[in-house]
Amino acid sequence: MDKAPDLDGFKRIRENGVRAKYMQPVFPTQTSPNHFSVATGLYPESHGVVHNCNYNASEGGLWPGTNFYTTLAVNEWWDNGAEPIWITAVKQGLRSGGNLFPGSAANMSGVGATLQVLETADTPTDETAWHERIDVTMRWFTDENLDMVALYFEQPDITSHRVGPDDKDIVDVLMPLVSRTIVYLLDKIEIFGLTDHLNIIFISDHGFQTVDKTIKGDDAISLMRYVNMSQVNFMFAYGPLALIEPFDGHVEEVYNNLTAGNSRMVVYKKEDLPERWHYKNNDRVTSIVVVADPGLDTYPIFPGFHVNAGDHGYDNNQVNMRASFFGIGPSFKQGHVIKEFESIHVYPLMCHLLDLQPAPNNGSLDVLIGSLRNSAKSVRPRFAVLVVAVTTILLHISL
Image (cartoon, rainbow, N blue to C red; front, side):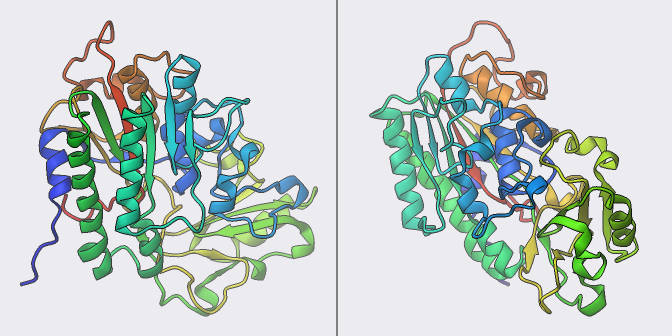
């Protein structure tokens, strides 16, 4: 019998803190929209980060080289009037940091986090680099007197795309790496004398779905087969989500052709998008939105093979898209399990822990106040906050 992977880090935060049965991500279940919803307490239609990549559909614009990493540096993609926690902190006299956390290197109306580190495609992702990232964060709290930091780790997302979420490398290598990193972080917090002063919130942004690589030929979602491209101003297929903006007067025909094109995708006119997605009321969302069934991706033209072995971006009600939440520190209960909740409720919780007045948001402190030892909303001690985003903590692995 194979030895079970070492997940002592998860055991420590589970036994000494709070965990949720699961956290429901926002739609689309992509990295940037979900991190920004955690940071702002807003749905994507309200904060405007409706996709991992910046584009201008009305101008048919997806700029050459645009991807997740380049978009992190495009300030206007993030600066839409929303107020993330690191800006709320600065506006109210605290000091904040963003260490690779998506959106935290952008300035909102000229205001930014006190200290910022931007993730790029060349950012090291090995365990040594992760330890250095934690060491920097600890020094921010102790040497730079920061009150809150948003810290980001990019695995096991990267590898899950390449090999799929059920691959042995994920179960036996990546999740233990995440667990060891948690141990390293908690030990460093103690070494730096922060144990009694720092609340840590661990989240993931979404789950993961295995891509069915046996789907071939006509069964694969190849969008250009279904539409007359002379009628389309903008078409962007990205994982299971495709955004399409027809030229004026062609929405109905393009929609009908797509609907008849492949039974393994759902085609929506913008006005018919499900209300529970909170996605339709934003000018950046195109007139037509396509979402593939779980296990499939969308392509402009199917290349004959599936680029990813695993993916996310599907309906946020899908079980495999569920995210994670753990809280540990002086304010959190110990060994406590809370029911599932939407990720927008993390922002008001962070504001409460930092004794900040929240900016307008879609969340409610009532949802998570019961996770705290003192559930009073009035006068309370203020502790520093570290929110740690480990993209794709896989819930199907026993934690």
